[in-house]
Amino acid sequence: MPTNSVYPRAITPIGVTVVNTEKAIQWYQEILDFQSLVGALNLVADDSHFGQLAIDIWGSGFGGGRLSQLTGANGVCLELFEFSKPATAVREKNFEYWKTGIYHFAIVDPAIEDLARRITEAGGKCRTRIWTFYPGKPYKIAYCEDPFGNIIEIYSHSTEQIWSNLL
Figure 1: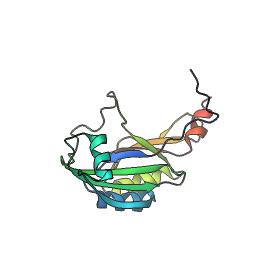
Figure 2 (figure 1 turned 90 degrees about the vertical axis):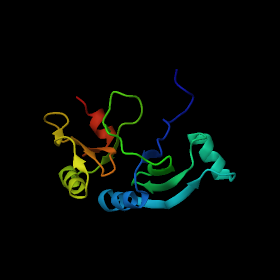
Figure 3 (figure 1 turned 90 degrees about the horizontal axis):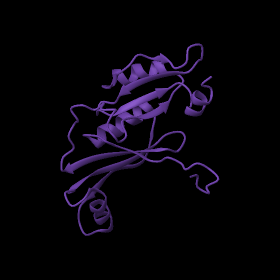
Figure 4 (figure 1 turned 135 degrees about the vertical axis):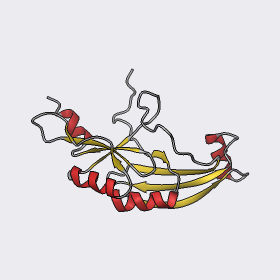
């Protein structure tokens, strides 16, 4: 049943876990041109307001970590999380797309080939070829991966342009 909202709700932020916040901030700024809103802040499970908020979000097993906020051109933010207690661990299989939860986020860059190359040269990888999404149309996509194991889809055009021009 639709809500009484006049507009669709905005999506922001997208949270991803990384093994090194400082390296991830640098990578996302240099390779994807994201801008930093808040550098790596310490998260501590203690009696402070934010300490209690963190425990409420991640549970009693949370002991600490770091958080950073980056933003893209359209105002959608990327939250980078690094956990120290328990320590962030790299997933052995980071592309279990059939399991629930977020398995990728997408960015738009008309120079999709150049960005895929830059991602690879900067320690990431291109998981797929660069595909023309619809034969005979200019829309391209590719799936890549950052050096921290997070899946990044690249669109050559906005989501609205690609999907509203399906036929």
